[in-house]
Image (cartoon, rainbow, N blue to C red; front, side):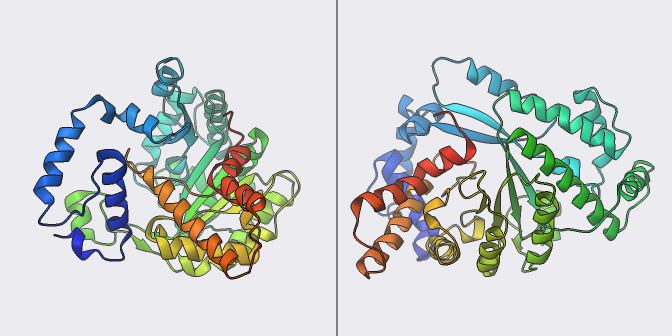
Length: 379
């Protein structure tokens, strides 16, 4: 009954696409058909074809990147790599948010864990970076080629090494740090790890523009990541340019993908990324695909249109699925349909020639080939 009210909402499209592709149900899910669909799905889930591995194979998935903390053992990645019965690559992605979030109450406990896992006592900013480099080398040996950072916004606050060591020592002593100190620390952290990514030829992903856990009552009841986050409209384009420039000025800017949850800054991102392209990689600095609250037809269309207006859409690396659902691979089909409709509209309007060879190269590139080349995957 709720779903039939969701006209125009991507959940309506996703739900029916998943029912069609995985459960063979081509009808409409509503209050009248709910029991029928419930019974059909439960019966279908008993079949071997609906195991997680078979769902992945049915979806024609070649490679999956998980998000992993620097202290993770990656034991399951090892086991999967040794498993001859599953030919899909499962690689780690580096997600060091806990190492950066110096303001969090659990930060010191995390440093102790990082010290234990890396074998390097973390008692200074320099030793923090040593410990993280140690773990990066391990992740790299396990096939990692991409990092991911969840940021409130992309910041840049000028700092000195001495300032950062003093801020870190202050936090280690149990003292509270100021917002200014936190921002300087996070700037230094991001610049430092960015340089390491460049050495390793990793891709740096920046996800920003979120205000987390707005409903404190529900947060206290349910905890984080339970549906009470919203878009942050703060435009950090100037600081983002300064951050990228800090890495670029020493020729240490890695391949970077920038995702904002705020759709009003699509054009700003499109112009910032144009300032830092070079010949080391095709589309070295990318605007990421429409994300989270923008992961719908209008959001995707607007993001790709803006990117096409300001950059080279043909070099775009396309869609990513960051859902935890093993049925969510249909969102790649959803994206590709929207992308083809957009490009087809330009062709029909005479804005691009009906050149099948050229169009095939663009569509296949955005759908698959550009990402394989960009991340350096062995597929």
